[in-house]
Image (cartoon, rainbow, N blue to C red):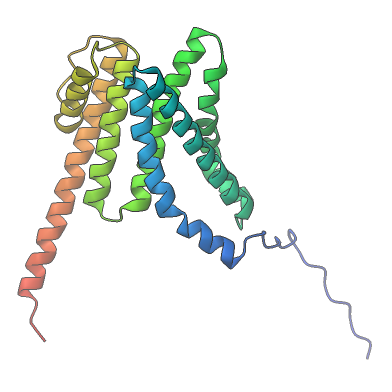
Length: 230
């Protein structure tokens, strides 16, 4: 009896496995904590660049900042090349390319672009610092505390860099108070009014998260006390 030919497969061809290997995937996972620590250091370096006045310190912090940025770019390229599903990787991480490209606006001569570069550097450092906190801290309270510190530093830098406050100390104090309690900023600018609303929403979210975490903790403790031993 003559055998029928096997039917043609219906639908798209199976996707071939990407270039990722267990060794490369393991290396990418091991990079999480070191890159997270560098991300938090980068937040402080950007802050130092905003406050530094001595020429040697400005130059040193600029060099350190560019070296860290080169490390971030290399890590991003490594993860993109070794991703098992590159389409999914780019769909989830395309926005990081924007933050990686912002510092290069510093080479522009236009004053508007230079100011945009400084603002972009602060925002990029804040995003990097928030992601770094997520890599380093697994507990909700610890992660939320680290992100709140990053938010305070980023907001205070923006207010100071854009001239809403004459001193960084006043900007830091108002930013911390607004982030934690929702107290309005004392500056009367368009940026300050926008940040008033954003920080008020953030403070409510922080309070709700803390209330939920403490509520879950005491509920688990109460259930464990009433649970029969053995």
